[in-house]
Amino acid sequence: MTHEKTFIMVKPDGVQRKLVGEIIARFEKRGFKLVAMKMMKADGPLLEQHYGDLKGKAFFAGLVNFVSSGPVVAMVWEGKDVIKQGRVMLGETNPLASLPGSIRGDFSIDIGRNIIHGSDSADSAAKEIALWFKEGVVSWDCGEDKYIYE
Ligand code: DAT
Ligand code: MG
Image (cartoon, rainbow, N blue to C red; front, top):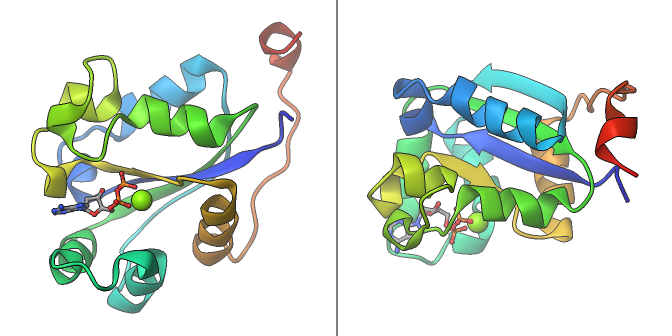
């Protein structure tokens, strides 16, 4: 189904390092469709909800603190299998385990500075899109779709 959606966020390290355009370009060139985007500062309560599954982890406070330290770019991308494909494009959580060609493998080194977030399942994608884009996303027809999907 070509209307699957995933939540992708460039974290403060990716914004500071001016990787927003590079990341958007990779998703666009692959053929995925941007249906929502905003730059914002995420506060602690939002991030505690977003990373709720990780609450018991030793790195949780540091993670929330870092991701709230500066602007992020939150996006929703749409397309066939985009949740799984987005994760493959990101690489592994630990950049040192990420292959060259992946975003984390090409642009990062430390796990706590891995520059980008991507939903890991249909369930988390739905929750994250609802959490970050309460205003909803944009539905639009892309004229190239007939050259991307057979
Ligand atoms: P991912 O971002 O690949 O979905 P995750 O959901 O397990 O990974 O963790 C969220 C973020 O938390 C991750 O991008 C970086 C940080 N993190 C995860 N494991 C960590 C660890 N062992 N030490 C420090 N930060 C960690
Ligand atoms: Mg995760």
